[in-house]
Image (tube, rainbow, N blue to C red; front, side):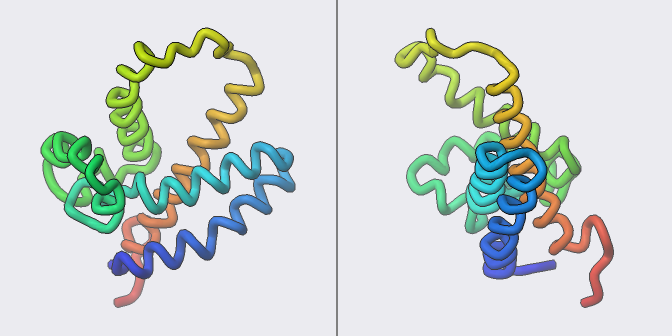
Length: 147
């Protein structure tokens, strides 16, 4: 089980690697989307939002939006928060639900669903998910780590 400092160090260390490898495979723009999402996911959308943690505290006064999420998750390291794909998807859907009222104030009239936006969304989700996998690996939940 890694400390918060180790999780942060790992995110800082792996973000450029994710961005470079993704850029090589899918192009610079999508690689930067994935890299930025990896950094954002590791620092602000961590699986540890299910408790009072560094990522939770980084939200500042907005951390209040994560209190209902913490009550939704039955216990720390539950599959809803620490599950591969499920955890990241739930956190992103939860955050989107909080952000959706902003669409009333700032409507996205120009937004079109097209292949470019879908590719960006996939790159973003992959970056967030890779940060979660990074976290789960350090916690020894994917591959048991020696103590």
